[in-house]
Image 1 (cartoon, one colour):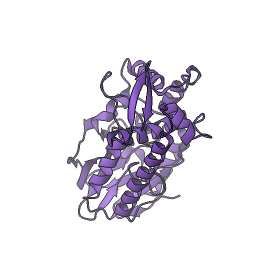
Image 2 (cartoon, rainbow, N blue to C red; image 1 turned 60 degrees about the vertical axis):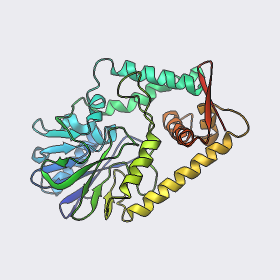
Image 3 (cartoon, one colour; image 1 turned 180 degrees about the vertical axis):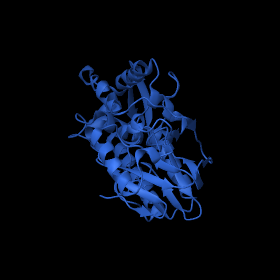
Image 4 (cartoon, rainbow, N blue to C red; image 1 turned 180 degrees about the horizontal axis):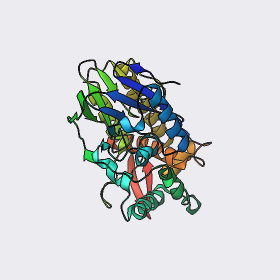
Length: 320
C-alpha cells in the first residue's frame, strides 16, 4: 500500500514480525514534521518506511519528532534507527519499557512468576515467561526526550490535544483535533477486533497490579464525550463511526464477562482453568494473550461484585 496525503496526515503501513500483522504509522505536517509511532526494529520495516517517506517527498532526516501512542515493539521498536536530532515524546509510562533499566527483566520475571503461581499454572508453563518478553528484541533502547500527558498540546502540532487512553497499554495515549474531530487512536480503537487489555507489572514493584480492562472501559466511556469524526488506527482501516463502535465494544465485553461468570457457577476455579475453557485450542500457543484476556474478564466481574475470590495455599480461586 502506497502512502498518500489526506490533508496534513499520511498513513504509512509497515510490516511486522508479529501475529497482529501490519502496523500503521502516521506522518503529520505542521510547524514541524511529526511521525506518530515508529514501527518495529526490522530491516524490512525500515526499508518500507524509507520508501514511503520518499514517495511523500521526505526522508528520515526530515523527521523532526516521533510521538508514541504506546511502548509496544510494533509501535516503538524503530526509535534507535531514527536520526539523532529528533525529539521523542510519549506518556512517561513508556520510559521503563524503552530503556529497560538495570533490574528491569528481573522485576518483570518476578511479577509473572507470582502471577502464574496465583493463576494455578503447572510448573511446565513457567518457561512461557521468557516468551512473554521476547517481543522486546525488536526494540532498541532509546528513551523519551520529553513526556506528554492528558490535556497537553503537542509541540509543533497546533490544534492537537493529548488524551490518556490506558487499557491496551499503561502508556497509551491518543491524539484528537477539535477543529475537524479527527483522532489518531493507536491501538485503543481498532475497526474489526477489540484490543487485548494486556497484563503489565505495576510501575513500582510491590504495588497493586493495574487492571487494564477497567481502565480500557473507562477510557472508552470518556471518548463518548468527545466529538470524534473519524479515527486513524494502529492496525487496519480507519473508523468512521466511532461512538457506535465504542458502544459495541462495551456491550461485547460485558457479554464475554457474563459467559465467564457462567463458567464459575458449578465450582470455584483458577484463572488458568477458566483460560483453558475460554481458549481450548489457543492457550498453549498464546499463553500471555489468553491469560490477559481471561484476567480482564475476572477483574471486570470482581469489580462489579459478580464473582468473588479466595486464596488456597497461594492460588486464587474464583466463584459466584
